[in-house]
Length: 117
Length: 115
Image (cartoon, rainbow over all chains, first blue to last red; front, side, top):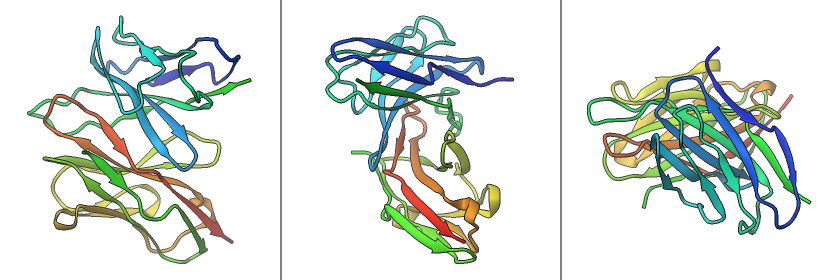
């Protein structure tokens, strides 16, 4: 079945450590995204990538880094510079919008819970 | 700046009551609009979407939404809610025809349906 796989589902991080959340998709989608969900704040965009080897900062990119070396993979690193990393992280993907097409539905993974201990 | 506003943060209804959740967007140019739902302990699912055409969109589980361009609104409705509709609902807007698919979410509305 096609879909988006995030791992790990639960992750504990010590203060000062970097951690990387994995996101893999087999939907042949060009675009991939990372969102963060906090209570009362909804979903906020961290980074997105429209194509391999290219990515853009979202609204809350500080303290995070990404890479897009392969179409299927868009890992997110939560660095020690992220002041409040405890949150639920959602990866998503979609086909790329262009001027000739209508919008494309975005598909979500099941999410990763990150807790700082 | 692009934004999506959901007016109600918490809504409590009794079963069989009618539901309307407000959503307004601020977005230059053409937008696509979505409602997503997240049931307790589950991941986000698409309820319905509007890309073009009939502004009244029907989704899964008896939900519908109406796109009113003059009001920049995309309110979600259901004539009669059930206990199983208890969930968090997110409105989202996506730019169309530009360099990005960036999807902007509202802050969510938590709906609790009392049996």
